[in-house]
Every structure is written in C-alpha cells, then in structure tokens.
Length: 97
Image: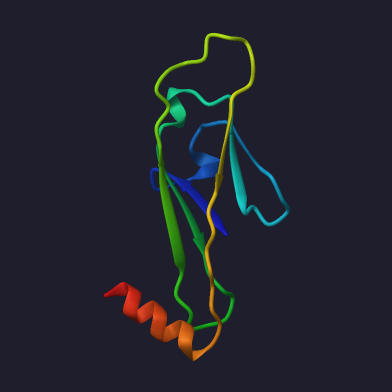
C-alpha cells in the first residue's frame, strides 16, 4: 500500500503524519496546517501478476492555522475493495473505461 500527497510519496512530502496500523491503512495528519492541504492518494495492488492497482483519492483543505496550542489531527481512511479472480480483472477493465 502506498500513500501519496500531490503525487509525491508521503515519506518525501515534508508533512507530519502517522499510520494508525501495521498495514498503513489509515493515515493521520499530525498538527494539520496549511502545508497539509492537497490531494491524498492511496494505491493498493496484489502481489499476484495480472491484477491492476486500485486507487482512491481525497482532497484535504486546511482553511487556517490553529492558534490554540494543541495538536490537530486529521484522519484519512480510504476503503478499497480488492476482488480476487477473473471477476476482478473484468471489473477493473470496466472501471478503467
């Protein structure tokens, strides 16, 4: 599973974040500020050959800085359903059109 911010790997984006589980399914933006504004994308693919990458995106807009001294955390959870088998290939091909 890969997370990107504005098409850059989250690790290289320069923002503060954490993952909430061992599989990196939930991304938390720590102390959200104006620099966290952007397009966040999660990409998942099966290790098996022949299955397409599944992608989900969300736009995050931070409207202003927080004046109160406290941590502001934005949690982004994207649900991606990966279907295994011939039906998955057909569904992915249909979705791509």
